Amino acid sequence: MFKTTLFWGMARVAAILAILMTVFGTLPALAAGDRTSPTKPTNLRVTAVSSYNVSLAWNPSTDNSGTFSYRVVISDGSTYTVPQTQTTFNDFVAPLGTYSYYVYAVDGSGNRSQRSNTVSATPPPDTIAPTAPVLSVTVVNSTEVALEWTASTDDGPYLFYQVFVNGSPSVDARHNQFAVVQGLTPETTYEFTVKARDLYGPPNVSAPSNVVTVTTSAVGGEDTQPPTAPGNLHGWDVGDGAREINLFWTQSVDNQTPQASIVYEVYQNGVLDHTVTGVGRTVTYANQAGANTFTVIAVDEAGNRSEPASHIIVSQ
Image 1 (tube, rainbow, N blue to C red):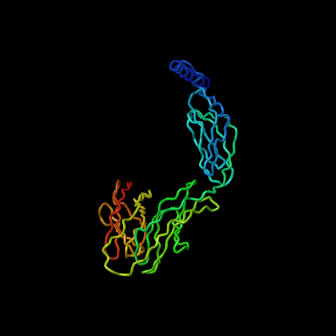
Image 2 (spheres, rainbow, N blue to C red):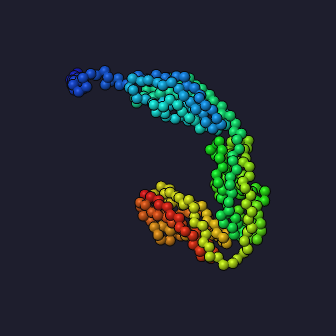
Image 3 (cartoon, rainbow, N blue to C red):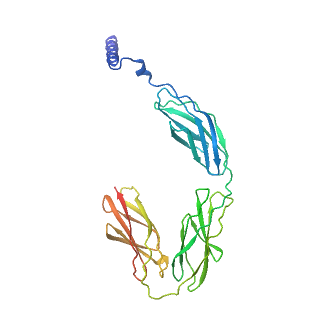
């Protein structure tokens, strides 16, 4: 019985091989596939270094398949894929130490070349201060002043802003180019300036902006001016299956109503869903799958309503 089973098993294998020979004309290539690795990239070198960038170049690899890509491996744990046609790479860095790099090639069958040589680069410290922003006033009421300013320029990618009131630090605006200074005294004159600072400097701080002098208004009076529209309305479905929607916006300001007292009407597909007060965020639930339009309107204490802000979110 064993010999019979073995005979028919061998016969079946022979039949399959005969069919493959008929289709492909040869067997060894079918069995072996592409086992040839690309040649290793050579002469990896650093071509430029700044506080926030390291540029690399290398001599190209070759491969019998004709198609491959490169992997750039960095000592910070990152690996980047670079197309075959590219033998250069720019790495965004921070001026906080030394980075090392090597490169290898990988073909479509997963064959990896040997590593290139390893090179290192130490970005120099950032000693350049940002330029000064240009400051302006957008809204004034009895206890608040809303400010905005132009973006500073710098050699680095990250900038933060600090508002000063009468020369003393006040609102840390982080990366925003606007702020509301609160808790001021009615009918009082204040001087405002803004400075920019970068992230990795020692620190690098800009010269102060232009000085803006503002006198807060008196309390009360007829209010016919609406708040500013909520800004940068955005959000998303959190993906929990319940169609939970997180909404965010930049809070409005008003000529009389304090920011903390402004009411926000939140509409879903044109129907009032709920209201929130003094915040720039809320949670709601989409009442249908697919696209839903969410609209937010600011309302001051006198009932003046802002222009609407709308955003479409697709829910599952």
